[in-house]
Each structure stands twice: as structure tokens, then as C-alpha cells.
Length: 356
Image (cartoon, rainbow, N blue to C red; front, side, top):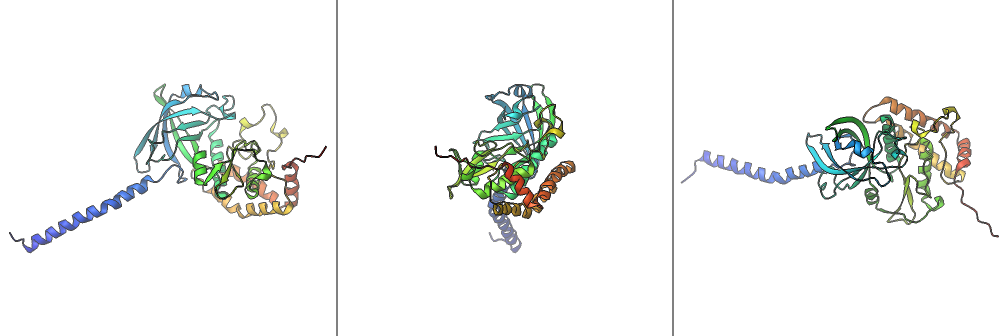
């Protein structure tokens, strides 16, 4: 049977539409894959999650060997899709673990790595979650300090801000909503930087000096003395595969004077009697080396302040508090001789061993 001209055209159109649909499938699949490629630390856009667990039970378990507790995490994609993960949570920390210091301690979120493959949390296993502790504004300022360091130093922990709806399963109801932030795991940091953790002891003069000067001046800028490289206190030491000289990556900035958390101050001591926490804990250097470090921060000033101004939540009071504290540092940079004198008061001097 012969087809009419009209029937032939209709057939050709049908074949064309069919082929177009078939050929488009890989593209649609690729687009879906691209959507799925967004992961926890691939962006700085705040996310929203629900956390379901027995809050009473977890908060009562604050020992150094705290147990894992069953929990459920829901992540809300911008598209409206909801991702659910059965996880475990436990309390963590040192100072913030103590109920006298923190009403709500930091948490560790434990994913099952195989189950998160191909999801928003792909590649994650054990994640630190910084919670509100006493006041939410302290969390937001610490988050911003991480972001500022990210902006001036690639060798830093990535962070992701999250609006967290907490549900207490023991009471079968929503408990509260607070902001917190996730910190990139040590394993993912070392993989991203193509490095390994330095296990042995290193004194400050054995580290990458450019990295250490940048880190030390940054800690001085934010008024944080709660760190040290020899004891690896609030720092991790890494060795890049292409270089045998270790470098330091800092974390935990909550004791910074820029944040000025009331739980970080000695009880009963008036603020007027407290010494500044703006102490330089880097190596003692020659003047020209200090000046190179000063030049770096002068060049990075716009980047630092713009990072604060671009804070996704706005929160002008939080931004302004950090800006005012950083302003003092930049005022000090205008008098380099006096600043060098101040840095030399506390800088690290190698021990000198004399012959008997």
C-alpha cells in the first residue's frame, strides 16, 4: 500500500520527534548529573536541614567517649526535593563540651559513606557541626572568620552555613531552629590539598614560613591566642606531596577577641582588667620579613572586608562587630615599626642549648 504525500510527511515528522527524544536522553541525564554534582562544600549558599534525634539523651551524654545516637537528617534541595539520611550523632569538643560553658555543645554527624554516594553529602563520613553553644551570633561570627581565611588562604578548612530545625524525638515535636555550620573533614581537606598529615613533632621554624606568617598574622588580626603549632592545638600540620616542608591549617576560632564570647572570659573578672588576646604567636622574624606579611594583609584588605559585606544572611550587627575589630589591626599596620615591636614581645624564639 502506497502512502500519500501527507502521510509520508507525518511519518517523517514522527520519526524526527522520536529521534530527537532519544538523542536528548543523554543530555537530560547529564543535566541531572550536573544537579547532583552540587555537594556540601561546593558552594557558600546557606542550606536548610532538619535533624531528628533524642535531644535530651544526646545532651546528657557529654563525656569524652560519648556514644553514637541514632538520628535522621533531611536536606531540602532548592528544587523542593527532600533528601533523607539515617545518621548517628554524638557530642564532641573540649571546652564547649562542658555544660557550664555551652548549653548546646558541638556535634559530630556520622554518615554511612556508601549510602550518601551520588547525593548532596557525597564523600562525607564524619562531619563536625558547630552549633549555637550559648548565642547564635557567636556561631555566625566564627563562620565568617573561617570564610575570611578561606578568601586569603587556599590551605584552609571549608565551611557551609546551615539553618537547622531540631526535632526532639523523645517529645515528638520540634524543639528549636538555629544556625550552625559544617566544617570540612580532615580526610577531605588532605585529599583536596594533595597532602598527608604530619605525624612527628615540628617546631615553628621547621614549617613553611610564608604559610606560618600568614596564619600568625591572621590569628593576631582576629585576636585569637588559643592555638599553637608545636602541640597541634587547634591546628593540623600537613605535608604536600610535592614539598617536604609542612604547613599549618587552623580551626576553632571561638576564643577570638573579635567574637568576644562571654563564656571565654574568666568569671568575676571585669573586662577592664582583662589583657588583650591580640598576641603574636608566630616566629620572631627580621623586619623585612614582617613587612612582607604586612604588605600581604594590606593587599588583602578589600577582599577581607568584602567577604564580611557579602555575608549571605546580612546581620549588620555581626558584620560591624568584626569590621570594628579588624579596623584596629589595620590602624596598627599604619605604624609598622611600633607593630613590629609589639609582635616581638611574644613571638616564638628557638631554644638555645649551650655546651656545659
